[in-house]
Length: 374
Image 1: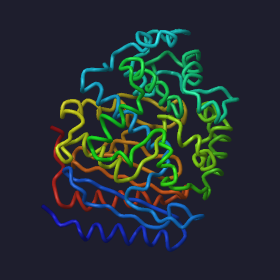
Image 2: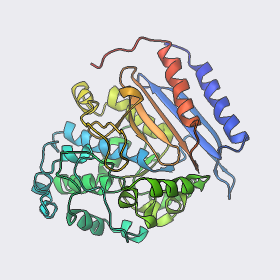
Image 3: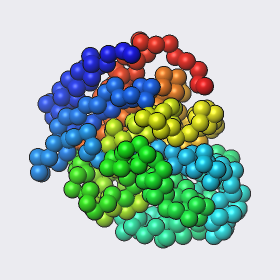
Image 4: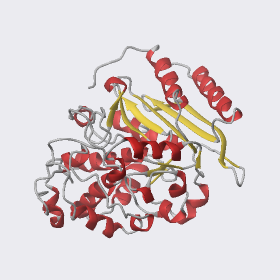
């Protein structure tokens, strides 16, 4: 077993420097290798107004990074034989079959190929608090394309689409599946949430806008379908995330997580973590196969997808990066998972969070030869 003390020290210095320079307020970084922690670093403040420090179990509201929890819940249920990727959604959710959506499958939803990424332009945060209302909206929508014929980022609808399938097929809310089948077995009950329980709200880090709101405005101006997937009143920005009612709501396109918790979850997809493995090696290979082709409808550029995850860095890392800077993913060839959470939302040409992930990846790569998936 390698000694990862130097890597831990390097990452700690990197995030301390970012906080000291004012580029970040609070940061968490975690990495697991072969089911064991090799990095668990924190720096800065969870909440500037109270002076509360970031700790390893501080939950951060994380935008699309949270989609990884939804995807993983579906795969765990499939592993248990309780859900099938080829299930037609209308079989368990009959209302969904309207407007030529009868043939849409769970596989289509996981691939962002279902054709229902859009929300009404008048959608409000209050709508997000009503699960049934959002499901009625999605069920009543006309697809932007024939399901399965192309793919496009389902910014918000991804969570309700898959979450309602889970609820109808298993008679359990997806939040229960996350808590009972993933978080609790992994000892991460205080670190992986959809809706945050009232007793944990005061532990959640408070987000702050750096230049992310400005970036969203630019996306709105230059990407034709951006306002369709993220209407003006519900753009993924700090003001929305800091609302206590939003934090408490189950919105499975997002989640509130610690870096340690989500890195631990991804590690358990690839192998055992303290005796817990979430899916088989055969299913791991299945869910890391890139199945989409052509440009993403929402962003017009490349966004290659597997069933539930985005393929990043040439298909070596799978997972999700979140609006404003968080990221989490896993490298099956190395049996490595990495996650970074932060509360200062912004974008730069040189993303320091990706730089930290690259530091960890390079350190592990130097110690071993990449192996094919089992």
